[in-house]
Length: 110
Image (cartoon, rainbow, N blue to C red; front, top):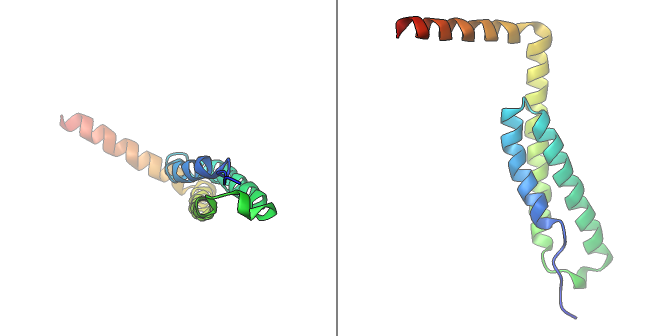
């Protein structure tokens, strides 16, 4: 019998990698969503593989996708915690004010 490829292995890897970008560009929330989906799909394929291991050939991709998704989840969670801490302690507003002051100074110096 010819071995098949697990259906969600590639998309899990892609979502896991994109979650790194999502965690940086969306204060961590986008990364949480994308890496969560990637992890879910990898777990689903892992379950499919364990039911019939001789039928599938790309289990290594699923393991890689699962690791990438876990790393994305951890990074995103760290960024979300930092963002929420800054927001609730009021430091986020201070950072925004300082950033705006710097922009105004740069515009005046041109």
